[in-house]
Length: 279
Length: 99
Ligand SMILES: [Zn+2]
Image 1 (cartoon, each protein chain N blue to C red):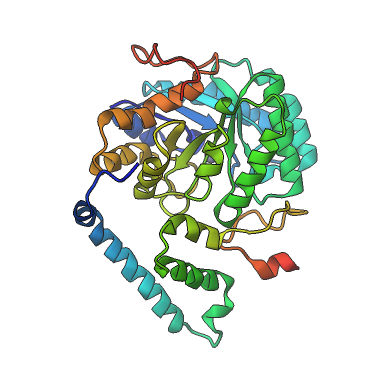
Image 2 (image 1 turned 180 degrees about the vertical axis):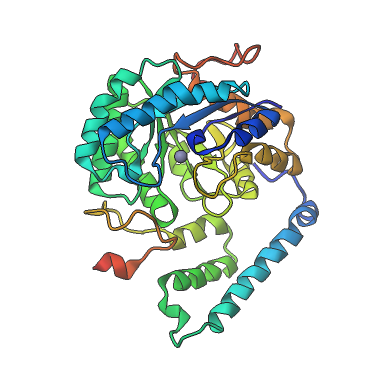
């Protein structure tokens, strides 16, 4: 079965990972801009990263037959630095026409600070001004519930927000409901220790249904599993779910979200009939 | 929706791996009691939250995963005034927040 990896930081991964993902049926990857594990010192440093995401990484993915998409921003881990955030936000628009850019992300909160929230709002405004999709990172561990609530409230305060054009990622048992009940899309991140396990991800899908939800590995430079989505597919089978249900979560739902960007190319022979923005 | 598996099928699939996890938790609590040094493990805010979570696990009220998430979560409503550290702890550090 073909699948889409909607959240992976491939700049941190090896060609072996690309090969393994391709062998397991991955046809497209979307890569949000994220923290390098250390703070970048200048807006020029971000521009270089955006060039890597829009020029070099798509070529690397193409060697394995994988289509590469990306999202641009200054990420929440660096959002406390307001001066740098403003500089980076000013430089993003010139990259938005690049053919693999789907929108603004992953923006959001890290430790739920006032500055992070301001940086988040700057990015939402940028996305709305340029009619871009939005991909959101929710905070980790004890900060997740409060941060998700602050994010949902901030989004709803923008009159132009269209919830079906917004993905609020890294949901867990205590945050999925507030995201979905406000009309947003949500993602479950399959991590070895934090976020959700394979079995809990299937539990959450069983609890909230198969609409507006997808799963991802969020693999990066830390302890993470680039083949987590196919492992989720196995867990769904173990639970007795049909191929149609599995395909909806790992293939159709990412397409329904990303197709709302004119840059997304629907995989050949697939889903031409799925309306743009369908659940 | 309900889980499509029967209770017996769920036990067939998941009992062994969760038995393993339960023993890991038991051994973690034993290890805390065998710890070097004189401090009481309940002084650690993470260990206190962990024990509270075990209470939730056993209270028979269902919806356990979501409610245990809330045991570990920051219950405050206002954004932090400034960044204190980059990484979360895993449990709400009430004493730290009070400072
Ligand atoms: Zn990420």
